[in-house]
Length: 115
Image (cartoon, rainbow, N blue to C red; front, side, top):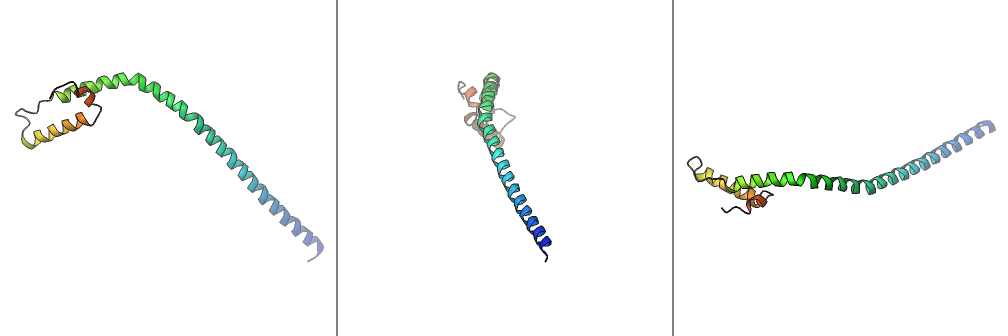
């Protein structure tokens, strides 16, 4: 190998090493910047989302509560002791109404109704 080829290969090798090092450094910088941006968004967005959710909950809760009370009243006054429902069907309906009134928000509307 002559000296010109040796010098050319040496510089080509050095250039490859430098490019590889630069790419790795640029990738690291990009990863750091991305991580910082994600952390910033994660720290800012939840309070904004919670504030919006609170506003929606306050404005819509009255509507939901009145609807829940209506459903609860209907469940609480349901008459399953008639000729249409009998036997196992009546038992299943009664059991289902009992589950709805004790395990859900509808119970709030039923609490004042005597069975």
